[in-house]
Length: 130
Image 1 (tube, rainbow, N blue to C red):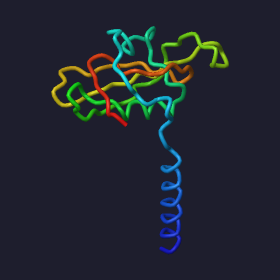
Image 2: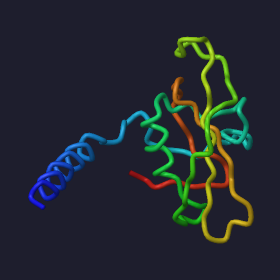
Image 3: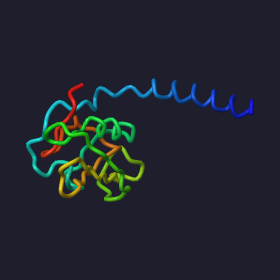
Image 4: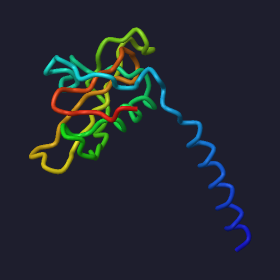
């Protein structure tokens, strides 16, 4: 029993330190909605956030168009695009499914964790102002 309590205590300390270390990268703070209606919705117009960690920070800022809380699910990787930042010259995109109350069909967006360009919010969604 003491061993279990000790393990639990160590894990809770580790999780606390790790969560404090996950401050949002200022480069990925959303400040505007894209004017391109295809932005993020196709592999060719993927959202370049620069790292997998930034993908999660980006997703955490998204809301429905009227501020609805969203749920997001990563559906997998694929859909390679050219990239100077990938060791093989191509970067796999991550496909994300976005849902919120009142939405008839899920929204699918493509995020690029290899390349960076100041990200914007896709048309039809909104974002939390940080």
